Length: 73
Image 1 (cartoon, one colour):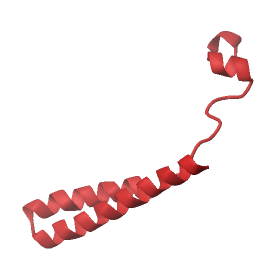
Image 2 (cartoon, one colour; image 1 turned 135 degrees about the vertical axis):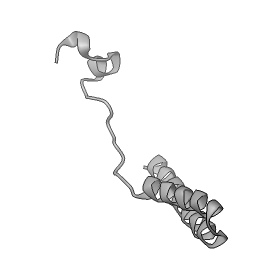
Image 3 (tube, helix red, strand yellow; image 1 turned 120 degrees about the vertical axis):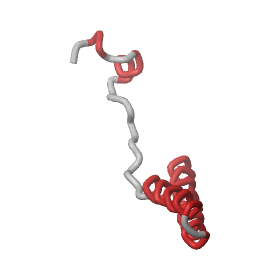
Image 4 (cartoon, helix red, strand yellow; image 1 turned 120 degrees about the horizontal axis):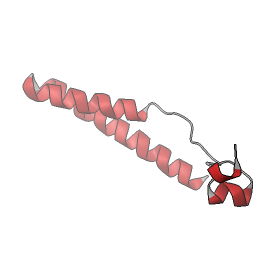
């Protein structure tokens, strides 16, 4: 990699960015599944909407928990 292709931060620190990449999680997929079930339940039945809402809240809580955990470390 030539020097002109590096960013200023890379050139000054000597380390490639980013220094930390969080591990992959299942929470974004869970949140998307909850959203899909919630929307599908609107046109079918309230039971599917209730399951979708529960999955959505579980996914949101898990993802926010991961974000808070990453901020602490």
